[in-house]
Length: 220
Image 1 (cartoon, rainbow, N blue to C red):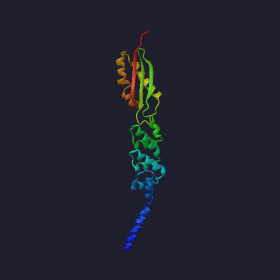
Image 2: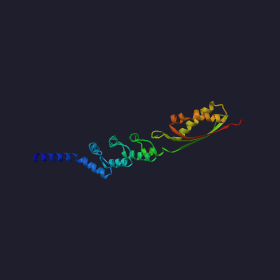
Image 3: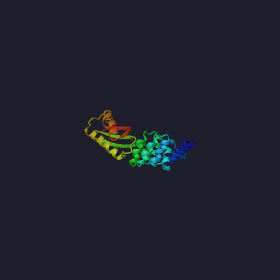
Image 4: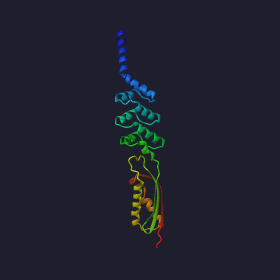
């Protein structure tokens, strides 16, 4: 009987000894305010990612209630990702009501983008003014406010290029437009020239407002 007890104690001792690194990780995680299950701690041990910076990032994810599993964080870390870059971007997105998720943000991070900086201008409004566009019969002053679709991490934000495209579109329209009725001209521009397809499909821009002032040219 005593032999079986000794064997049992020995087995328990061996099991505890084998799992000691995992328990140490769980203890360190707890001191860093990170909640880890045994399985999660075991994964960190096996993947050799249980360093202080990793646990610090996990703590931020959990503190801000950002939905992402420890396994996903480990996978991103092993892929060469920067978890701090990801969590800072997701915190900013959450605080500013920007819809995104860890999978999207991790892709931005692996592409070398500073996630938070890429999100900073998500609500920035851009303005373009065009004056005295004419075909000899009517002249147009055009004012527009817009912002970029979110996320716009890989979109080149160049107001001059946007301005050139709008000016080119209106210029082409004026070349073939002979109607001098200001109401009909404005309706044509809004519905068929600078419409939703142009803004969202061509430019990947969210139109906030546009003002069109049309004047009939006075013959001299």
